[in-house]
Image (cartoon, rainbow, N blue to C red):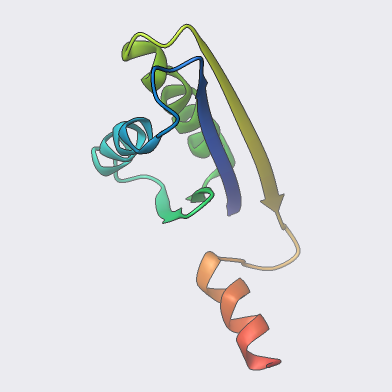
Length: 99
């Protein structure tokens, strides 16, 4: 299972606020049930099969274009651990156990 951090940023918008675009990507996320996700203050974390995550990211990248944005920058970070099962919760719990 992959854990993927994604940030979709529309460029050249009328306002510096991006919450409208973030909300649009999260409406897309709510409409699917193959990938778990978590909104953070700086991006969105996806958890699931890597191919499913990448397919979903492609759709997320299109959301600002559908709102008449002419340019979009999408950043992706992938943690794909294959030696043992990983999850968002397990990663957070591992750190909390050491505090």
